Length: 411
Ligand SMILES: Cc1cc2nc3c(=O)[nH]c(=O)nc-3n(C[C@H](O)[C@H](O)[C@H](O)COP(=O)(O)OP(=O)(O)OC[C@H]3O[C@@H](n4cnc5c(N)ncnc54)[C@H](O)[C@@H]3O)c2cc1C
Image (cartoon, rainbow, N blue to C red; front, side, top):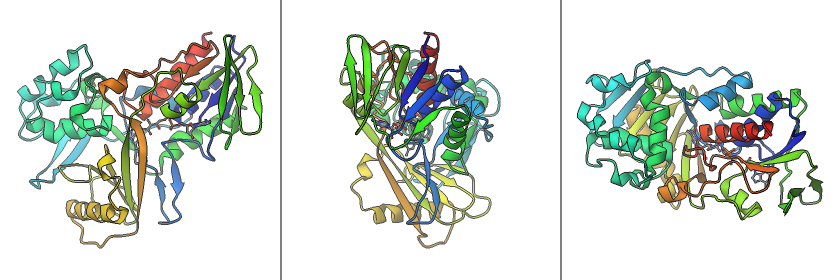
């Protein structure tokens, strides 16, 4: 029986581990390297622009059941919007709304009025090999890249979900995303974006839940090394102290892939990453702007119209990392102003580059993911990069943490 667990890292994987263990009555201590919880999913007051922003606007879907469980456990009721997605084609100026309905089967593909314009039922049926294929292959071998369905739906969807250039993406990860959302109909694809910021939903309520139940949470407490032996993990080493792992204690390593590998080189872990860029503009959108717009064939990929600001997300953004920030902010603003039909000069802005936003979702990198267990009987791993079968997402991080907690609770 485990008596106490040390969780290293207070991102969503670490927090979900801690919430699940606390729920099972197992005492927890969290060690987080930075001053703040949330990791790659966090909000902050940006001094330069005066805005309260997220490092990146995050989208959750109602089919992300592990995340929904987590939110409910910490007392947050997710309020999903209907599964209607507006798109604008930057090449032709055409716009349409993809209506997925609220059923539990993808019946919208049979309705020409709900489908992507210029696509036929046959285009969708051609996706079957992706869903039944057993080997993990690059998507270039599975998808018809010449089709309008690819250009107008599959490509933007895959770039957003896998954060990779679609042709190199993993067919297995793409298929799993489809199984958990699109194939389960509109009821599993209802979107949720956090108007008040990510931390108000995922982080602050979790910290309150944990503190109320006696968890110890240490910020600026980076684990610098792990002491191991044949018996298992012996100690956690910090800059000026060490904590011995007692016989009935366990440790969950819930840090990003590169940090986990640095602490324990024997772990399997992805070693290639992809960037995401978000730009936030300090201007309220015109009234009636759709909350979320997918943009085809432009620099910006998604536009989010919050109450008092406009944000845009660009995934698989490594190609833009060397571009001057001002130039990118201006280009993106021109596109946004055009799409939202605004005649407004560039407002105050902030651009956030997350260089290692997610691991590269290729078949080769997907094969480098560690299972929850490790060779050391008192150490398990969690994180969006562990072998959850999903790309690096909130859902993957939270599910990995729940798995780690369950494994320990059952020991
Ligand atoms: C810009 C951006 C946009 C995104 N958009 C979406 C989206 O729309 N939808 C979606 O589902 N997902 C999205 N993601 C992915 C999602 O944010 C991540 O998959 C998820 O937050 C990863 O959580 P994690 O706990 O696995 O890792 P992390 O968030 O990286 O947490 C790890 C924690 O460990 C800490 N740590 C590291 N080393 C040590 C150490 N030695 N000792 C102690 N602590 C340590 C870190 O400080 C960090 O707090 C996005 C990510 C980014 C960056």
